[in-house]
Image (cartoon, rainbow, N blue to C red; front, side):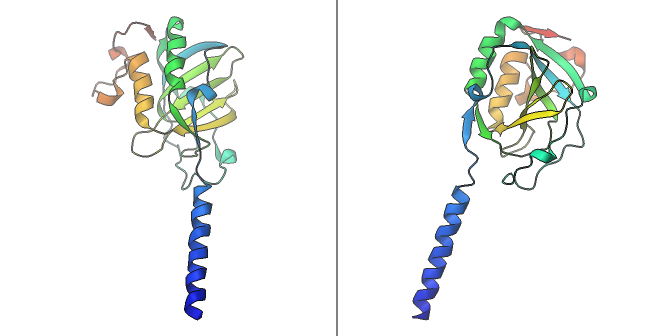
Amino acid sequence: MKRIISIALCLFVFAFSCLTLASCDPGNSSGADYFSAEAIVSVEWVEYNNPEQKHFLSWVPDHTDDLKEYDISKETLKAVLDKNRHDEFFEQLSGCSILDTYFAYDSPNGNCIKVTYENGEFAIISCNDGGGFQGYIGQYYEDGRVKVFYGCFAARDSFEALLDDYFGAGIGSETSDSSENSLPEVSGITAE
């Protein structure tokens, strides 16, 4: 009898664990759920120098209070996407899979895409190097305070494709020359 109770208890704990862990799935959205070409002033490729970026141990708890403000002084403009290509850019972004409120980092770092709206607010789209679900996608007020956190890319190649296709960044085949004057000549961008 004790053995039957032990087996039943183990099965209950196993079933409860499976249900609990399955409910932790962050869910997927597409870029279309967060972005559209309407009310956009600019789409830019920026480098955000943020060595203080922190990686969260776990994405499960709500880390909204731990997200850091965006410091514009850490940003270096690399290129501006021609306005005639905004619709095309947002169409490709709408096909990207984003993990909803998946907290990987407290702030962006490195290569980012900055989308600025007419009201001065802006969104930052980034994806850190390395495997797994990483990066930071969120919106900020004009002064850099966090407005809303969206999540991160489900796959880094979605982010790389955006930078490569619209800014000629060559992220998939990084070069050793990091000077600002070495931007490739690509139709539809303006080097700054």
